Length: 376
Image 1 (cartoon, rainbow, N blue to C red):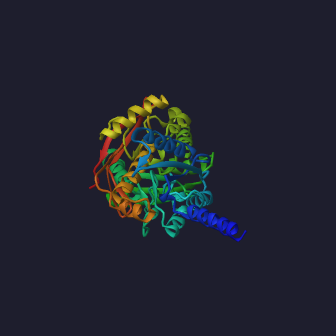
Image 2: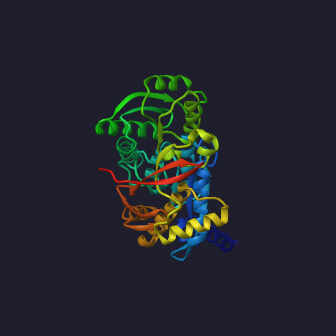
Image 3: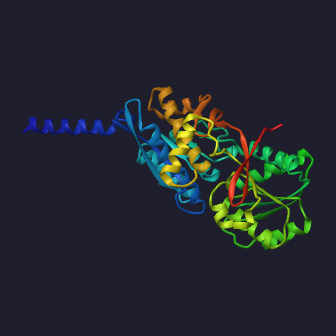
């Protein structure tokens, strides 16, 4: 009887050891995604999820002899939910890396958790400098707001010949506030004059009070450092009120919903963006764009392409680290140099990607590439 009891205890002990093994010692490892699948900016999360799903089909799901499982948690476009999603992915799902939230506010909410648990998160599109500032485990696959804002200010002042600007910014979003402030500083340094800075909040439907103030000042350019829904509605109301000046936005504009919501009111609208999906700069980029059109029967968006870049960056880091340990993967991500991804070549420095800024315009109901801005 004693021998049988000892045997049972041995079995239990062995089971405990197996269950206690790190996730990277098993046959399958997990990469998580903390995305805005529902909520105010659901279009971003859905596009990014499409991009990750597709690039996995193209390049495969095996690395260092193990299968990579992809686990998505919906943060509902909410900061608290983004923090909860990061906790769940790390503590429950045992992911070794996270493709982080699309927005800066949600990345910032998840950041402390990733720092404490020492698990890297990399965002496709979060551009606020604070996302990576002073952090070892937060990265991005695109440029930062301050750089984008300088490019936008240069384009507004030199290319659009705008000498005066009015800004209408969403104060409920960290990204919008930061981009607006950086643009204001850069534009004034160029010699332009910012006539007024008006505020709105995500979910607002009526912008007539702010726009009346703006129209009375008659600016050459209206700058909207916001997300696509508010931008589209503001454009509609600005045109209805008689504004005939040029309207410029940032990368938050880059979603099909901009045109779907804005219609004719966004015709001629300019915005800075992370890349172009028409002209591939790399072989993997061309494969991705061709496969996207074939699978989804629509034009690829840059948000999905940048999410695909995140997956490629993580997979490359695992290979170079020759490890599934999150800390080693994070160090390898920071050492990324001239990696060919779907949007071009990317180098990571202090958590930030070094990439060009492109300018697009809505023309004839479609978005067209105008060119790139070389910041002076």
